[in-house]
Length: 344
Image 1 (cartoon, helix red, strand yellow):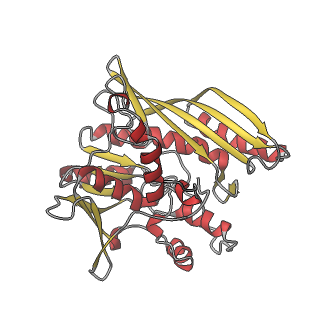
Image 2 (cartoon, one colour):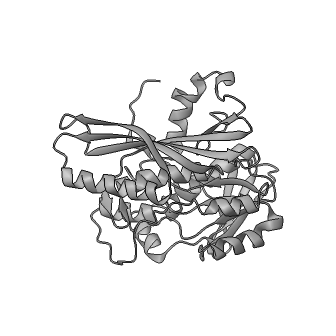
Image 3 (tube, rainbow, N blue to C red):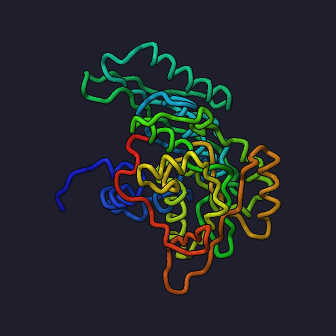
């Protein structure tokens, strides 16, 4: 099939999943999709792992192209460091090192570049993550739009600490707090909409502190993901598809700020499609869900909530059902199309 790559292919929704599968995953032989008894393309999690001497070396790679590069709550530098740290954490690994690759356009403001790099450094220093290498390039004007930062994160997890996305029947779905803040901020700025509330800003924050909770409930955390591109809807659809189960969520329990819903509504976007950069979605064994939530709240995640559960599918396998505030149900589809371009 001859076609053209569109912005939708990079938005983190259905088109991204399809093009990655068609152009990359299918071309890798089954026996080369993982190495050294680790996790690789066989799972398509937030990162990959290699089992070395009884511990998993977890590696995650990402590129950040957000526009605008500075926004309430951070900038592309904060985003690049935080996003990669969180991807490593969601696999149950403690981040220990990072590499970065920075490509800037000729004529890019050097003071702004310095600000972006300082923000990046503040995050890695605050999380005690070593910056062990990288690359810096300049492209001719018009060859790249401003700046692109690519990062590789490295973490360590014990053999029994690695979290691989494998939800199970009966699991409860937990979120750590309000969803969609980052996506709503970028969406509003891209559309030239004034942010009426000064309190609405990107929720950017490293989630390394969650590792203590994951360790405490070792073996009871069956999946964890930070809902970035594609938001909560994409995470849940991925899990439902992988497991062949149905995931049912209660809209009245999903924490979304009124301003986020308002901005999404103005532009016809489901707020559950919007990215968060400082929250996690976690599938936990139902027997520990209440205690798990107590631990999250003690850690400062006061708005954490149990929003649904995984159920065995009899007929319609691999779907997400959304129960509305008035009691009706609808299928929560994975996001499709150009949701919010260049959000992260």
